[in-house]
Length: 206
Image (tube, rainbow, N blue to C red; front, side, top):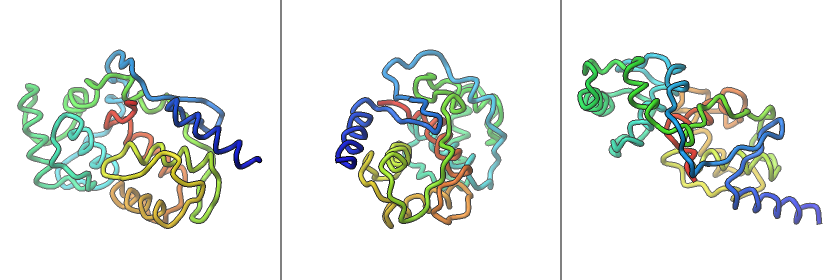
């Protein structure tokens, strides 16, 4: 009976597009985009050609949001990312140095409506971790709700109550792209990278 209740609750949250954070805070995807996301853009660091890790990944997925669909979100700022950055800079009246600084981030991420980013830090990160093999419907709902919003992961929201090998492999792939040790354990660094990657790429759309 208890498991049936949990599944019903998860289904209701999925229907409403809601995730419950560590403190019980609910956040939802938005159909009312609202003002720009300049607050989020102002927090993003400079990214340079050759960089690797979460900010290079976020840059690539933000560019995909603006139509640069050839970028695969590798987490490595290589030639194809440089070409996309320079093209974006030229189109937005920015010196096409390929250096992604404040002006480029504000044009790239600041221009995304806040309803699609939630400014990232507006959303509480879960206080708990998730270990491979763990079974917990609420934790898995929160994790899959993030993964499903990040290219290129084929994840269904609430698809499993267990942190099974398939989902572990998805998290490990994300960790490698984000420059995090690919243990598959979802801890503070991975939660933060997941949340901000969704935000920077405008992923909170319904």
